[in-house]
Amino acid sequence: MADISRRDFLKLGGAALLGISAGKFIPPTEVEDEPNFTAPLIWNGTRKFKRMAFTYDDCYLLNKMQALEELLDQFPKFKVTFFPVGLKLLDLEKQDKGIWKRLVDKGHEIGYHTFDHVNLGVMSPPTALMDFDKWNNALTEVLGAPYAVRFVRPPYDIISYTLDVLCQERGLVATLFSLGGGGEPDVVVRAIQKGRGGDIVQMHIRTQDYNSSMKAFPWLQENQWELVTMSKLYDDYLRQKVNADGCDLNTGTSLTRTCVE
Image (tube, rainbow, N blue to C red):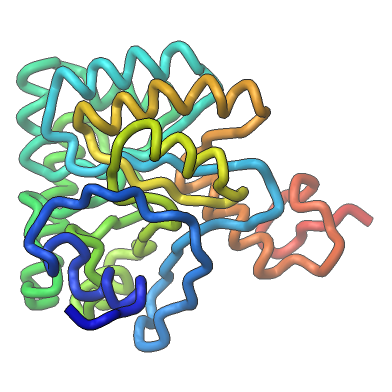
């Protein structure tokens, strides 16, 4: 197979292109903006703070979701973002009533990952909009109230025209990652330890990634790292975009006034 860039690898579908499941943790890299993508797109947040965003895709396995919830309870300051498929929003709620509301009430975030893990790149924009609305209705059902969804993680990490339209029409931010792809826990933890502030870490709800989280969390806490939701990471990123050089982002009170005189 010819050499391709990491960005092209993601555009073509990553593991789907290779026909195998990802087995190697992708190290942190700087990724340029996608020039033909006009909607908001984030690969990593500001490098200014010791903050990372851990994200967990798919959410197929109830026992691993419950185990991760228990693990997060041991680190109450750590907040993460889940990208469940709609089918599992409903299925896990049937098996463990209130699981999604518990996670939201604890300060974690939920983002869109399609209803049944279909590649958005093969959908027409109208079909994708209907898929999002179906997924969003499922989320409202399990939470018992409407929820402001800000982020989308496209299945197979594919950037597409349909994703662009979806983000613009539904006010979503396309969320990729700067660390991710799976791998043995020891390898993953070493990569995280070499990570940088603003890294978005892609995980999945599976045994391997749960074990990686279990090993990484104590180290992150001991080394004064913050784990924050995508909303927090993205808001920091926006503040950096409008912030004058040298200002302290932590003093900001809005996206248009971020410096204290």
